[in-house]
Image 1 (cartoon, rainbow, N blue to C red):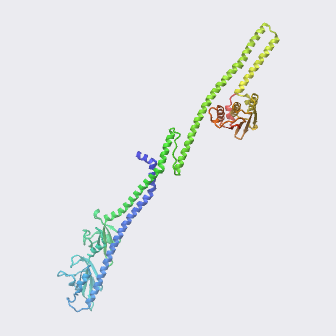
Image 2: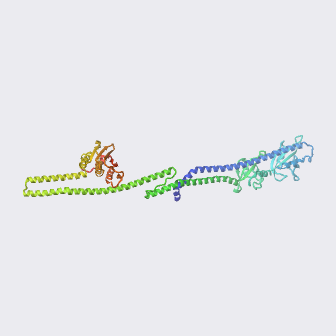
Image 3: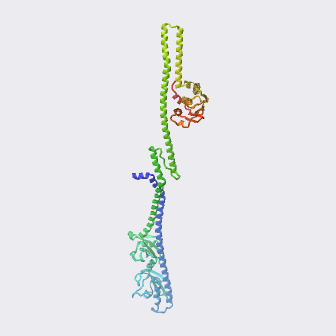
Length: 594
């Protein structure tokens, strides 16, 4: 069961289920059509059997009508010679008439008492027809009367007698003409119709007695009553099945004989063969459906394999390789346009994007490592510079102050001139002022106090003017008044970026003029630093050795800003930094105390 569920869980299994569900209405309709065809085959066989029975019934009716015509004409001949004796009353044409009507067993003349006067076929001595239904009915009728099927005394097999009374001048019957209709005509009809083996025609009365039949089958026995025959005669035109073992069951359809009330011709067919013929039609249709369904499933699987599954497997293998770290793995795009091609292109685009992100992440990690190394080196260099300045400048000043204080102490003890002591004290004060200025300069380099007291614009103004004093650069500073107040972290970031940009201009640009603009928009601060120097190349921003540029970029990213640098050879360089405004609460929290 788990294996089956696993197979059905695959795309191929789901396609098979989809085909089965899609063909289910067709299968149900085909089963319905096959069942309807089976019923139609049975109905057609029933109609053919009924047609055969009706044909036999009409043939029997024609025979009876021919017998009536024959008896009337023969009566006319006898009336032409009313005074002749018995010998003269037996026309010589009777044997010839019998030869022309092979369906008759005999043609003859009876006395009103039923004694046989003459016959076209020789009869055993003492044969009498007294009590015959046809004779009794003819004596009281002026028309040809039909008797009942009975064993013929002349031929010794079932015969249907017809009789016609010839009457004299007083109207009393003088003699009775009769014919015997042989039921062997059923054999001839069955032979002419070329009935298959097992098919038979039966003449039966309303009681189910078989009066005659074609073929030499053992069923039904002549003169034996059968309930199935009775049901068939009672329901003409409707098929019925005999209650017998499976191999002996018969399918019966009856058609009444109009000339003989209560008598019908029954077409008897082997039920097993009839049902097998109907079942073959059903099974043929079902087999065709099964083959069509299998062919459809095969075509769907083949089409899915060629157009879908192969592409998906290739895509899955490519995704697996990509997931294992092979970032160059790409799926081959199908030639045809469609969803799979779109999926493949989307996967390749995703793979390209992920590979680009991976490269960017690797480059960012490299830049971060370089920045970390640079920051560590910068901290060490700055610490070394501070230590050197403290040692060289402040240390020397403090040492000299210490020496002078010791000298003043000795001079005081020795009674030095007060004017000389005052001069030496003034010199000590000047040296201490230089030490204080040095400490302030170092502190200003680490963090300009004007940035906290007067704001960003004033800090930038001081930075620019100090640079102009130390270099030959002409710096134009334009700060939008709406910029202030600036939060602490963006202000420090912009100040550091401007100082780094000016440092790069001094070191590398060879410029004479620098333009600095700081504009405020509703949601951001935009800083632009532009110079007229030799210009930066397009490769410089991505060069890991450009630590100053990377430092500015990292500072901008620290406050969710953007950093752009561009330049043309001989046309100068432009740096544009955009920093979004942040909440004051966040700035205050990040602002150091004091």
